Image (cartoon, rainbow, N blue to C red; front, top):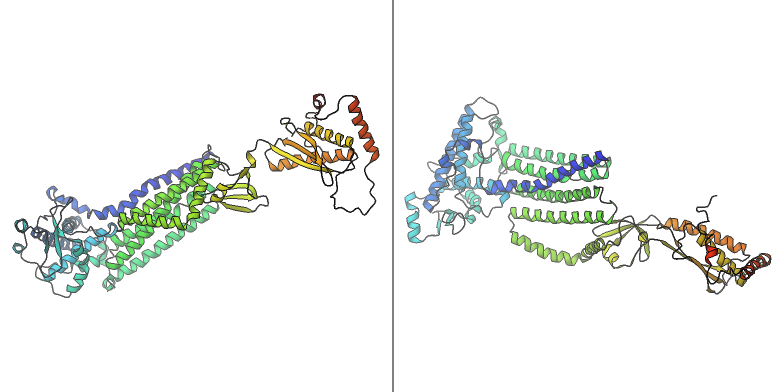
Length: 632
């Protein structure tokens, strides 16, 4: 037992680590993208005075000059890094000098990104879109050109003319002045122009480059892996693998298909392995293994998104489609994982020795853990949807409308959930108890979120909606302090009055003498009345048991003794009035009847007549004298 608890504690510790680490994993990709920071070890060699200095964007002239200068400088440094790397004989590692030069190039590209407004681009694809956008804008300007810097409005012209927007001549690319926030006063390319850069590039890519252009910078970016500065192994790729096929190179298509096959195989293997291990494990370990598939799905899609963006450098519409698909799958994986973790934590609480696994508290813990898991999963989905570009206000409004529609469509389900909460709060029943619900009876197996399951006497499983159960009259047989035995026996009309008196007194003797019958309230046997075809005798007693099966056994023992008493008295049990006697009826035994009547007469003479109640001196020697269960 100690070993299983130790294993359980380790599993739950890991589950808690995953649960609390989930928010950090969820925000990892979005946080890196939203800041537009290109991390590279070579950036450490940039001087302190320039490392944090933003690009000058105080006017349209300053913004254009900063963008062009940073892009040109970055391209030249990147070409220099390529040359240094190509001259190095190493097969896989870039020389340190090339890495430092590439780091300075990335610094320039990052500063160029600050000249564009990417606020309309979803966080999960913002960084990759920013990389492409600055290169597309440079490609456009290298073909159509820009005015001389002295012809572009500077700070003086902006103040004098009160400009808030300026369009690059011969293009539809607009710059605007930010009016609020951290970027207030800066001039950047507006979000609408950024969204049209790819379309504008397609319209001008047939034009020749102007003097001083950074030729083929965009082509070089989309045909190499990584961000701007590719790994060394790219130099060893055969020329045929770099041919463009639907905007991606052939090697990118091959690598993309291979990684998808690996991803599918890994997920399938993890799920099959977990299912087989769960079949041979304890229920708690099986529950713990259920978190592995969502972990594999979430981390696998997270890894695939990283590979597609940062390693294979898939670009364009294919990148957006794949990234969004994997983002949705990853989001579903995280939500699924949170629900599974909440269920596992609930099972761990139930696993505690202080909680009865079959009790109402265990059912309440399981239900609350499921509700909390579903709530947390909904929050994760909302957070992920906002990162994918959906407005949080729209999401909340949509959830509200959807919630209203769901509440109307799923009103019975909601009623059942509320009914389950009522059952938990009232604690009228719990798992393991035998109860009667209307015309149904059985042992309660579980009280779930929507239904209560019970096992009937014929071993069938009955599911009752909680909403119906909460409205029913519930008879909880298991919680009774004692069991009632109340039966009416029917004697023949030929039974004489004294015979009847002797039978009643003898049955009372049996009830008082039986060790399984309570003395208080006092048991009794009474002449109840004249039936249609019988003299009716009511037997009433409380039995010392809570179990229905044991009650039946004790009642059976008493009835056998009652039958012997009736036979000894010379009487018999009545036939229904519709019975037709086809044989000679011998009637009642007059000899035995006479003997019994003699005993009753003796009671009268000795003043021990047990009517209307049995005298105490008759009861005292009887208590507990019957042996139960009787020996065979």
